[in-house]
Length: 268
Length: 252
Image 1 (cartoon, rainbow over the protein chains, first blue to last red):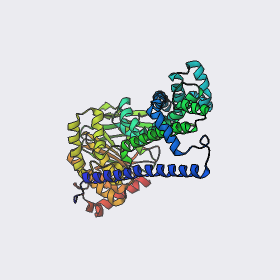
Image 2 (tube, chains in turn red, yellow):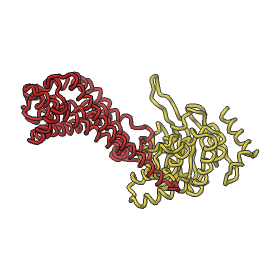
Image 3 (cartoon, each protein chain N blue to C red):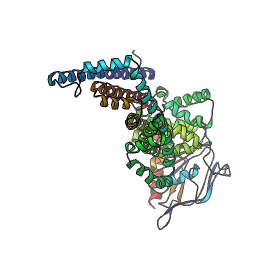
Image 4 (spheres, one colour):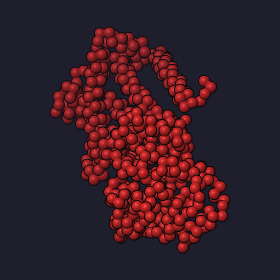
């Protein structure tokens, strides 16, 4: 590779990016191994009873059991469905309202206080009410999820749309671009970094929303499983559920980060 | 005299402010002939940008009007392209994609648009950088992309708002001469606003000197330096005399 044509330059950029990625993929297993090792050491040296702090072996044993008998997937599926529904609903509502509010300062002044007030009531506290109104089924959890996710995405949308560069807006106006063209060619790509930031927060919050909803009243889901394990004093089961929950939010977070890296490749 | 391509008729603009209207441009009339390079010089903050925005159809005048081919200008036209002070490139688009933008807005078929964009990028000397993102470019290169984007749709009029104001002197001189070449090759009419006297003298067929705010025309100075203009022209007596004349008009 002696020539330095623009193509070559890009190949180089891609390679170094891949190398960075593989380094990241390596740090994760090493970190997990260290953590499990430490955990094992603590249980071994402290000799705690299993219902206080179970050792990794019994937790993974429990996880294996519920994975094999289908119980794990049953609860994971329930939580994931609620999260997906809540995230979709919250994302849609918050971006739509955020866009409208970003475009209309009058409307923002009018609705702003109500939106902020609605946020000072924790979604966790509204969950019981939603259970009364919508039952212990899926709908109430989807709504709790959507409520939790709503605000950060709304704020990020407003910030993102408002931060679109004035110079670029004028430039598009000089081309006589329509509102739709301005939206597609300028506002969306310009706001994308902030929108993805909101989504990143939203994804992790949706896990919280689903679990909170399940705590309050449900017959399935990982939050329900934790509650059940508490009742049974089955701490290894609780740990197993917690680990799965963590794995879910972590992989979703990493997925969004990957999406971000791919969509915002121009920033590197 | 030839029929003017662009005309300002008693053009005025004031902005609403607390305690009354703040006039930015007052009663300005002038015309631009086809193929002419007109420079508008004035002190900083005198309303030059406001004037250019009105000529571009970006900002409606408070009084008077702008005529393009004798017809009142109500909104931005395809025939008129603007190069702004800032390059205003989209950081998420490559150089090529940035130049493609006007043609995407106008709905040109992609293949033809790409062909035109690549040709234009060749002309501004950026063929090596078509796939680079703006954050990898220098200020001068960014402004070249902006010029390519402005010229790619074959406008008849190019409006320039201090396009090289933030560049270093050497780059500025280089880009000035490149712009002159493009102006001649593309056979277009150019109106450039600047506060740099040497730049105005180097580029223009005619220089309009503006008064401090509210802007009005305080002098009109024809430039009779030979074309094509080269760097050396800046060291001739005729050039120095001219810059002196412009300078004096700005002072008075």
